[in-house]
Image 1 (cartoon, rainbow, N blue to C red):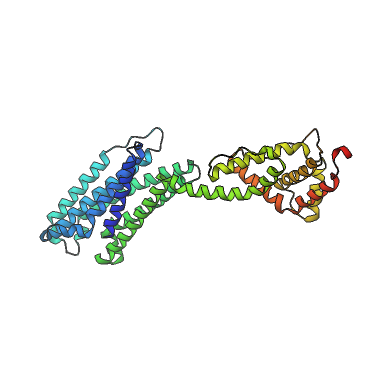
Image 2 (cartoon, rainbow, N blue to C red):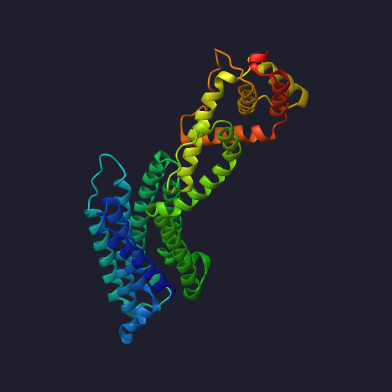
Length: 389
């Protein structure tokens, strides 16, 4: 039943992507990924115990061997699609030849014929060491593991070149799924070896292999969802991040808009958290530009003395927040200077860097004792209007 559930889940995901393809055509990589999913779904359904029981019971050993051949052939086809998926990420796309896959199928079929011809010895102790049985296992595992190792190598290299985000995370989950699938292939594909080494019975050996396989399938599904549906995964995270950043810059924004109402942009009819954040960043930056000419020339000395007195760090956000606090006081009393200091900004020109920078400035503006002392000192020095000085 678990095999049917896993198979149905893979078919459901594939059907969803095919339904979406009516609006947006599938990329070659997505076609190969769906080929992998559908091949594995068919393999799981064919190899499930209820499927074998539905077939003629009087030929049970032969039926089990044929089901195994069909299931393994579908698994080999699935890893072939994986190699094509990995190579689709390269430029130019390398050619993937079909003859190794066909040769693998042919060798597996020849080995199975040998086993069927001697099926009367199926329960004999040494049946697993027949040339046909050993050859079948070696061909199956050799081809599958070789394809998976190629897939892991190419995809790992591609993931390093991708930017941070759910897509790269999904690729890394898929690489992990490939590694678990290699373990599953080495375990389930070489029963003769492991039954001899571990002295396990068939009843104990099969459930372990099935659990490893289902774990691999779960990782494949998670990796595919995170990679192909990244918008659904990242949208809530972006919203939460934008809400957090809005709260962090709002104290500085509120003070600037109250002192400089002209920097406020016309309110839109409706906007989300990300758009509201971008508006506040623009308005804060406009306010800082207006205040530059009101920064007292003594500010650097004030910050240095206050930082030494409070044993606090004289970092860039604190200095920028002190400039805002002193400039607001000086502007209120009408003081300005013809050569304003250079505008302070984030070292990396990006929205994320600007948000982090202004969040740090806002935190220093409301919580730094250095900024509070500079504000009081500016009030004592420039309390009188400029005309009265």
